[in-house]
Every structure is written in structure tokens, then in C-alpha cells.
Image (cartoon, rainbow, N blue to C red):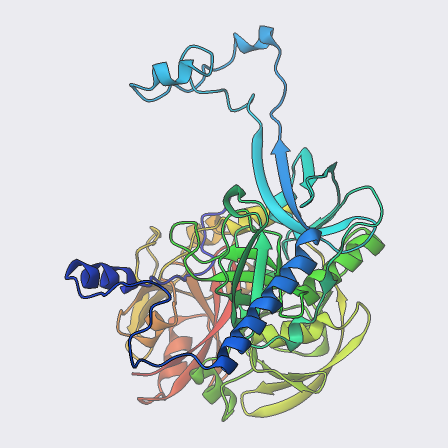
Length: 535
């Protein structure tokens, strides 16, 4: 497992609503009364509004009646390796229980020791939904991955052993199947037409409370969520965000619209505790349907790719590119040397502003458009390159999906922080210099670090960033000290950076308020592009 960073993100949100209620009732400021009592002379709800509310209630009831039979509870188990009694004597002793709990454990048998983890099955539960009469079911990859037993329970209590047809770790989508005919099935909708503010229902089995229904709205679309176990190059940046309550056990269940159509697979929550905190995320059904069709037809996912890594565009990026609007998808790296975009002439630092004639406002839009293409087709891109607009035709190739074990390792990499909260000791460099215009100190790259971090040839002559000033734009843009290497200046002049003198010449003409665009290599991760404003 690598010790190098992936990214830095995260924020804490404080909510004072609960404490406000306690405060008000504690001072006897809240008046309570019977629910049906109306204060004399107070406003009443118009009959037309009551009818409208009743219609909404009836709509929810109709959706649940139609959809719930096709939702399934999934129970999984992973068994340890069987060990003969003769082998147990020579094995490491089981873990001791905490002092004072010996008698408690003896009621479960044994001598007051914790169960041997190699003998105890690892069990879990999740959700799914039937999409065909003959028993195909969509769920999350993380629900069924590497499990020895997958059992499906329908709302009418029928139980089936399921077969895993295929999984895609990078999108967290899996297809399983139960044997039989004429199963209740659910209709798949179109997430592209779903709008923020629309009502949605989440149905699943949270916290082992089977077939629970929660309601909410679509809170946002096009969310980028860094889920564990996902390869960065193929990370989903197009999640549907909802405030419908989603908890552990909801994973794999459907997010349905007011017409009872699935628009997403509930997959993740944003929470400090691991439980619902008001934000849930669903994989768009358009992406899930594409993965499902490939798995059923080809036995694996065939994903057409442009072959680039993308980031959102900042105000400084747009200014450097000569754009009046802050939009598009910034190219920060290529998947490999065989990248179709690289071979077609796309360059690092380009901003993709249109694809297939459709404007690109953010990375998720680009992903959504490319999902509509198949391997071998050609897509026309329009890119902005530091004041120049270019048209580039790219023939899409099939993604070389990483092994799942490698995906997990990448997902576990620690985040480096530009504030030094995660820093690394670096061997002394031959020379260093502080650049106030950049808000950082840089040094020549120590030879020992080149070997330790397996730095690619393109970055070996670059300059290591050894300090970042807290009040600088570099700090704000999460430039990481002792991890990021300056390879190249892309704007306002294009220059390879192979010495302190090279960087000195590149920044010498910069004035307060100017923008400079740097190509960086983050040790153990890859390239990225950052535009900084001179203070």
C-alpha cells in the first residue's frame, strides 16, 4: 500500500436546530395542544390545499404499492477457512475479552475468549431491485463483492440463493440473478431528465429494518464523491444527491421518482458518524443500466473512454485560458501513453468546453456525454488552450480496468495536506529558494526521493515544493509540500522547469493579480494542473 496522497478534502457542518428546540422548551416558550385544535380566529388550510396534499399522499402510496414488491433484501456471508481441531492447538490464541466480560462471554460457550475471527463468518446486508421478469437484480458492488453466499429475500418472504453475474468496482454496480419466472420488476427511468427539487423515494433495508421507505427531494446533481475502493481515473463525478434518509443497509436499493421509475442506485452517505446526516448519494441509473447491459451481454464492462483525467475549472484557470465564463473540464493528465486524447492532440492544461456539440459546464457533464458513446465511435471535442479554440476528433477506445485489488489500494492512500498536517521527511536538497509570488519554497529534487517515490522521467528534473505559505493561493488550491513537484509552467509562458533559474525566469515578469498555471506531479499519484494568482 502506497503512503503517498490522493487528495485533500472534507468539511464539517454544525447544526444548531436541536439545541434550539431544547432551549425553547426548557424555558416553557413552546405551547403544546391537541393536533386537531385550531386557535380561534387563526388561519385555516383551504380545502383546495387539503385536496392537493391528499393527492400527494395518494401519489406516494401508489408509488410504494407499485415499486415495493420489486425491492429485495440481500443478505451476504463470507466464511473463514475451515480449520481442523488438530490444527487449532498449534494456532495463535484467540483474542482475550476485556476485563470483566469473561462471564458474559461464557454464556455463548467457550472459556470467556473472543471467537476466533478465522472461524466466524463475516455477514452483512444490503438492498437491490429486480429489473427483469426472469430475476436479474441490480445492486452495489460493495454489497456482494467477494462474498461466499448471497441470499435474496422478497417482500412476500420468498428466499432465493443468488448468483453474482458480474461486478464493476469502479462504478460500484453489480448484477446478480435468482432463478424463477414472472418476478415483480421495477421500471428504469431517465436520470438526465431529473431536476433538482423533484420528489424522490428511497426504498431499502436500512439498519436491518426491511423494506423501509423514506421521502425527500433531489438536492443536487453531478456530485463528485470520493468513495473508498474506486480508481481515481474512473471515479464517478455524476452522483445524484438526495435528502431522503439513507443508512447502512440501503446500499443497492432504488431511488425512484414521482412516477415510480428508478433514477438511481442508493450507494453512499456523507456523515461523520456513518449514519444518516442529511446527505445521501445515488449512482445515476443511466450509468448503472449501461454497466448492467455490458455485464449481461459481454460478461464484463466495456467502457468507452477519452483517456484523460479531469478537474473542475477555477476562475484562475478560465482567466489563463482566455475564457469569460468559468466552466468546462480541465485536462490534468492522461490515463497512459496510449490515451486516445493524447494521440489526437489534446494537451495537459486544455479546457474541454464542448463535446459532441454540447456545452460542458462541469466534469460530470463531460462524463454523461461520453457515456452515450460506445467503443470505436468518434467524438468531436472543442477545447480552449490558453487563448486558442481548437476542434479535436477523438476515436474512443475501451478502458483497461484495473484489478480490484489495485483499486482498493489506491482508494486507501492517505491524503497529503498543504498545511503540513501530513508531511514527510525529505533528504536535504542541493539548493532551494523562496518564491513570494507563488507563496512557496522549492528545492531541487533529492536523488534519494526520486528512487523512493519511483518518480517518472518527466518529473525527475523538476522542483520539489518544500513549503507553502498559509495565506497564499497555493495553500487555498491545496498544493502539497514535500509531495508536489513542479514540472512545467504552462501560462503565461510555456517552459519546462529543470532548475531554480528556469522557475525564476518564468515568474520574473509576473505582477500582482496575474495568473500563472503550473503542471505538477504529485508523488505516487500523477499529474495535475493548478492556476495560481499572484498576491
